[in-house]
Image (tube, rainbow, N blue to C red; front, top):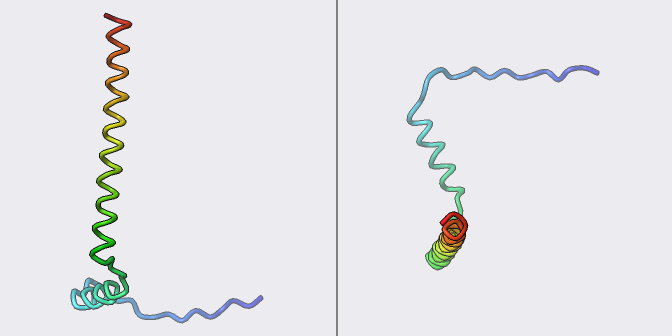
Length: 73
């Protein structure tokens, strides 16, 4: 089987800030930004889940502390 002929493109050396800014803008144009309502709803969900998780961890910790005091005095 014959190998495909590779086309070599010249490599740029160094960092080009203008090219970087252009490519960054192109990528940011592809982003689908959430609506305000979606952002608020998801933020509230995250805050509630973090609060629920922290409360659960606190209660389990208190349970183990209570058991430790009962066992070890």
